[in-house]
Length: 361
Ligand SMILES: Nc1ncnc2c1ncn2[C@@H]1O[C@H](COP(=O)(O)OP(=O)(O)O)[C@@H](O)[C@H]1O
Ligand SMILES: [Mg+2]
Image (cartoon, rainbow, N blue to C red; front, side, top):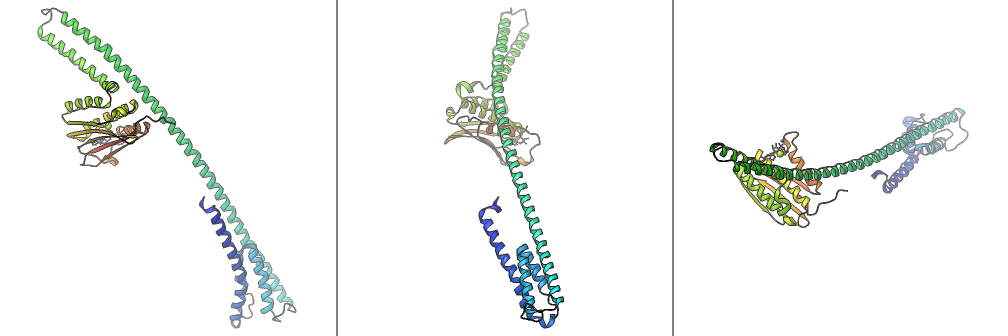
């Protein structure tokens, strides 16, 4: 829009006036030059005036050209047509030549005028086209923003529904399968010792214990058991110990102020931690993981760091969704997630979230 503000229009009209004034000077310039070179160009009396009218038409358009033509005629009659210093009493063929010159001057001016009009029409069309384009871009942008918001709120709803379903399945698995194992255990205990050989009894008990452990593991993965009751630190501690034991690496938790977090945010941080720690276990070959978190003003800053091999984000495998899902999860909760890494210098996932869950508009 900048070229059409008031300043620019003023500048344009000033330039136009200057060009018009210059166009009127042309016949006088032609006269001066012709007088100066008269000895060489006599009797070509129009030699300087055709170019003068042409330049006037170019600079001043229709009016500039017409007035310049009239001025040229007067100057020609006065200085160069015999008898000089008089407008009258010239030869008829001189008048005829002057008349042809005038007509040509007007035609030249008119042609320049047409060019000007064409340019103006083109500029107006261009302006209208640009405005229409801008309007469409604005419309598309707002449609996209709306669509993005809709997708975001849909994703957030889905996430909530998935968490609810996980909680339900986790409870069912815990209650029902857990009870079944307990019942089987009791039944086995009630069987007389000599019915089943001792080694088979041991194998049975072992199998049942494994079943109980697996059930506990599945329920814990479906829904972190301590998160709702004891908060993020307890859930992460439990998760960290599990990881450290299973993968033989040091997992340190330095998470503060977790009680200030909205339950949705705490759950989001837990899920991001799961994904990030899984990445460390799968890709980093690290010996240490540190999970830390604390409030900074009204935001919560959470970091998952490892001392592993690191990576270059631009070379990650196409279609990898883990990091994207962490970022998306953070966005849905009204925050941000950045992954800082370089080959050879470990990886840091930094999540910044509000303490309260923001409602998407
Ligand atoms: N902590 C990490 N250390 C080293 N490389 C990592 C780490 N986290 C992610 N990566 C790299 O980034 C890629 C993308 O990760 P992600 O999006 O989680 O997908 P996926 O784990 O399914 O490959 C991984 O394939 C791996 O190369
Ligand atoms: Mg991953």
